[in-house]
Length: 403
Image 1: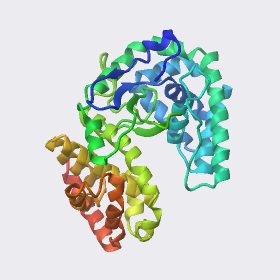
Image 2 (image 1 turned 135 degrees about the vertical axis):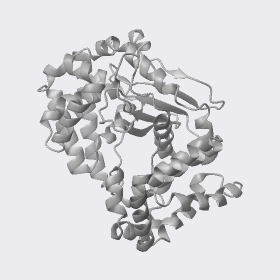
Image 3 (image 1 turned 60 degrees about the vertical axis):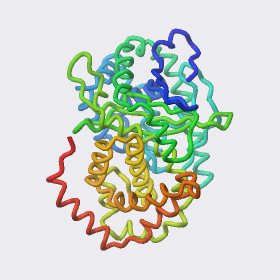
Image 4 (image 1 turned 180 degrees about the vertical axis):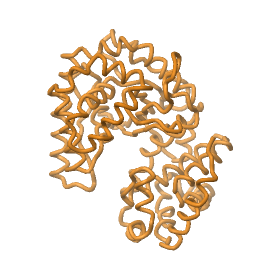
């Protein structure tokens, strides 16, 4: 990421290590992302949708997320500011009119050059395949206008000073996350998927609030297509460990860090393949809605759409295969157990089918070329099978513990 002002270079420094490939991997934080989540905190009382949950997040997370607590102390007086009101309005519109949560904001925030810059890296367009061309354009204009206001807020309130004051914590969080990541994992992903991206960046976000339970946080994946046509992909990660004392930064859990990173990067490999094969999942849509799967997936992670259900399965399949390529048998087993416990019932069948992919990589040079074969698993299922597997998991869950 290009840094335009020397005063911020040390604050946004990235920590890199060799992946022995042409791509680059780094862990950093991003001023745009943090500024957005700051004003989202300020906006909570103005929300019309999800207001109670937003207020709960503040009450809960400010106890064990020091950056959130510090932000409230320094900027709490701005709760009725124009940017707080417009942030609440933006989120309500995105949710109610366009069916999107705040995860939709990560892409435009990354397309925009880092504040205090007011320019864009490349032309940004909001894209949702469930919306019309006109609706997508309308959402694009809404978000672009909002980011213009957000950049002005950053400059006016000298938000950069806040990052300077909390520099030690951000640096500590970056180092803490980095030490959890296995060397060469992006190379393993490239081997499995048969393609690569220009860069892979984990962006820690100590400002993002997600109530922490059992060391589980929130990761959001996004990408930026550069003017050159190359593509950078990102994972934005909330803390997933409660900070209890000095020297802790919220990211000291190896399983969760590795899971989130490989998972969110995996979406950039998988989603484009899933959504271009919509016509090959007509039967599964019916099965998804008639069985217990839709209701279960909504409870599992808010996955109420059959296409999302398919994509989430395939991304998790990629996590397991990445660990297998790295010869990390323990991680393979834990991921298999973890995902089955969380109702991803097609994983065993997908793993079995994948043997055909591995046995003929001359024919299937990329994962995308094999996706139509994997979709057959979903299409050839039945309500009886789906409900039966979900019932088994429900009965076993009380006896399964992931350490």
